[in-house]
Length: 217
View (cartoon, rainbow, N blue to C red):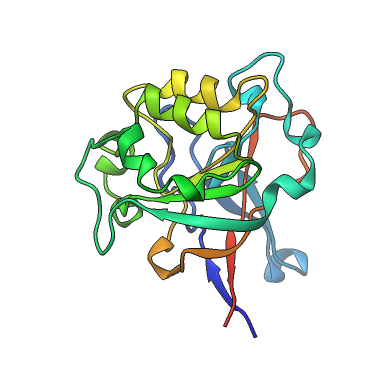
């Protein structure tokens, strides 16, 4: 049997949200005692926890969530470990030379997952502020490889060139699916199958996902 590795952050009432994003709220709506069954009401942003970005997140004419084919969210993936056995220091710029050491992983149409070790900081203030970040040149380098999906254990691709990186990766002719805030990447081999389907929202900019790695025996 293959091994399943959960790559998703937990979702709990009041859990950490990206600065200026909506708070996560999970509250009882009906209970066994009062209503005969348990039902909860959830208020959540489209970029809460482990999630993916559709091009419309930053591009007015970009494809929306429901316009992306399902096969983009599932298939063979390669782990690019930028910090074997540890984590990159806070605010480390991720540059093209760092990525070029793993160039064989960036095959056209493929899925690449970047491990920096930053997921170990989840729940601390610096998780959202001091993360390692792609440089604008690194985003251009990745876009030129024409991969289909880029996942990462940071909550966003970049704090130093955030909008520019998103526009490069999501832009016309590239349209890389960006998966953010993955966890447990230390449990993965170099090659595995990635599964990260969004909810079937119509016309939206992104979605929380349950990301899972299927690791063969």
